[in-house]
Image (cartoon, rainbow, N blue to C red; front, side, top):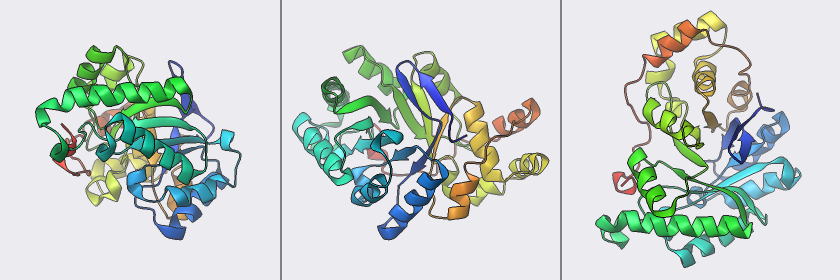
Length: 281
């Protein structure tokens, strides 16, 4: 699975990525070192995770061209000058001269800093800024995180450019088929962050998921990840547990149509990521 990629429009990237959210200190680069040794080729970062300097330690161990590197623009920097400052800081901390993917981390620029009714125009302004970064070559591709269909439509109406990637929370308990179909029709690749609901036992101990896992001789986590990939969704997993990092790569099995139907019925629109609602709109 680690050698497989998806291709949407001009974007080609690994199906499976390793995330760095909440990885601190030596646990960050040790986990990434292990992941890279297994063959992970996509690392997902953000300056808001406060560990890009640690990520650079792992990046230095492999050829830069062998890793698809993603970082993000955090919501406090949604103006052109601040965006460039933030991007350059990330490049410096990561010790690289380009990013493979650069994304808006949240739809809302920062509620306390502007009139909430102006959110749409701010998104358009900062999206045009990201497009200028892509044109200059400092980033290869651009995308967004946690956007709704309405926000995507509004931004496209103003710029006539769709993002190349949408990263949203997706797992069997929170599956938004409508937005996935919307993105497929517009060549926007969907990637799931939080694909295991942050290890929530409500997901991993779900009787239906357990039954499918036993039937296939794999773990519940592996079933959840394989199900997303079967739907054409990329996944970014995050762990400091070596066994989990390894097991998350063992996805070369097929779910039957019956298995997929069982998992499809699990959706409860349950989000693990309850981060500031003010950042969503």
